[in-house]
Amino acid sequence: MWKKKEIDYNNKVVSLDIEATGYGRLTDVIQFSMINENRKSLFNIYTRPKKFTEKFLKKQLKRTSKLNRITFDKIKDRPPLYNYRESIQKYLNSADIIIGFAIKNDIQWLNQNKIFIEEGKKIIDVQLLFKIYMYVQKEQSDWYKLLTLEKCAEYCNYEPQKKARRFHNSLGDAEATMFCYEYLQCHYINLDVGITDSKGNQLFTKKDVDQNLSTLKRQSALLKDFSCIQAD
Image (cartoon, rainbow, N blue to C red; front, top):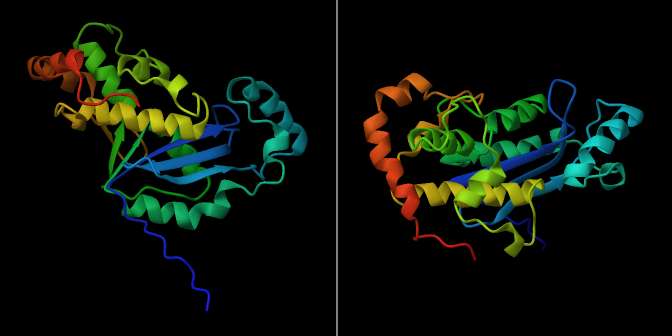
């Protein structure tokens, strides 16, 4: 008798990423990906938001597809992310650590689809983590300037041309984010500076950085001599 395969929702670290119809209030998810620390793809789905008219959605995708190559034809018959909320929620609830790049945006889109990260869950924004160390090393003097995933990946010697996927594909971005996270972790860098709350708001402020500058400088000096993880 056929037996349904049991899904193991337990993962130490999950990296997630979303491609959306833009930024702001009138946007929604068109691709969602999640991988674990072993690079196993837990989710990689294209989705069609149902709250938009076809005309409005096509207008949005005409603009964003220049970057992510996700066209209306690719998603027109897909269900919305909301339909997957139960399974996604189980992965998020079971993970020890959730990471993303500019993860506040991703969390907002998840919340729109009734998917929530529970209070107290360890969430690390790799963009914030990278920004703090660039700031500490004086390679980034403007605290409020946002650094891109491409910039972070380049700094960490991640080579997407050797991978099957490129940037602005949510699966490729989830993989790049995981690589950068592990790269920074490799020499026991204090990853807690990248922690956020359940909504993706940073907890480690500029004031915190300035007060702990000497300690962070000693740690960030290690970033210039990473050799323990190499791109495949």
